[in-house]
Length: 582
Image (cartoon, rainbow, N blue to C red):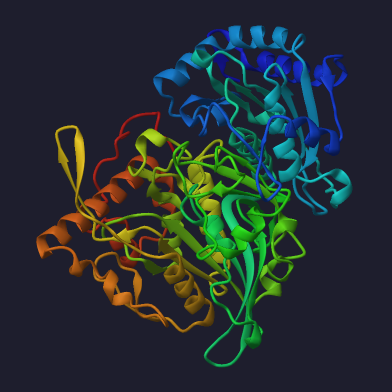
């Protein structure tokens, strides 16, 4: 294994696991029941008129730039470290020594939960939280809402043990999240943001799932029944991929206007992460939904009803002196968050299972990659198998308050729209491409833009000025588009720029208003299209070369990735180097 400034990583991993396991018998650890945990947390929360709780945190987004992975070369060779992350690794031996001494003295609360309910793979999740800051007991309470108790689920044959240790009071200057995937341990130091617990356990579980030939996908899932124009009622599984705050949970928890009188409807399965298998089945993970709280009862009625029931719990949401919740008020943060149990959802829209069935049990699968762009990306694109695999690799979107509030709106690309991949990202893309090829007769793939079109931004010195506002696509319009896809009533035509199919007719939506020609002169339009294609091509060449070597480079894919404007045969940046990152 690798070494960190002369320290054997093997020895480090052994020490970390031993120290975490020793906490099970420590006298400074308490393990309250769910009822007691709620009462402990309730003392530090704000009670809303819905009789649920809101808590205020010091840290209000994930500390992605302060997160490091430690382990074998399979883990560490695929990190691109910033200066602060390199410093964290350099100081890690000393940090661990201080931490392991500290946790012997500090009061800790322990909670044990289970991820998933199936006969094959159900990770056991044990979290310890320091109570030096007593209000941080809420972190354990929120995990209690999010995951399962052992007596609620079917336990799998494989039950990997995962640990997460929270020390929120760690010095701010030394804030860090240290992940040891191969031993199933994560340390969260200096943050009290619940997202670190949720994503911490999911990240480790996805690594373990990958070792078992499954693919952890950052996607919501549901079952949809829709009646086609031929009168036949069909049942589809759906996967919606998307970065945080792009509309993944919104559209998983949306009926799309499907008509129960026609036998149509939805069954909500999961909203965030599943373990996908090559037969199209997928194992769910959570007993709760984790939402961004910019919700309203008109556009997100199912989520609104679930979030305003007792049992939901929120972070950093505005509550006035009378207990009224102002979900759209961003005075405190643009990244208000909440957890509600699946049971809060309308039972008529809720799947009895958190797992997806195999494709052999369904009429097909609809996969939607959610992006959020504001210039020339079509509102909806129908993709070929190769384009869909490339869309997975591109993971195209913009930064949101969940990841980096200082960079909101900037272009971002994350493989699989999954910021929690550990190890070689190209391996995951090739797994997904193989999955699509095996099942191409039963899978439809789309790229959904939940942003809009027409925006013009102009840089003036340090400032970026909005010269022309974006025409945003509304939630009801995207819901109508998805309804049309499920019913098979969308009329498609060839897109001249990106090699995809785009709609010329969608029932109930004036799709023509999103034509980029309505907003740009011809030369502006060509500039935006060429710019996006160039971005895509360069990203793929520099980050996804082994994927490009394996994928069939069809004419449609060439246009989608921009290799019609950027030479595909240019010398690779690592030519002649032994460090080529595949």
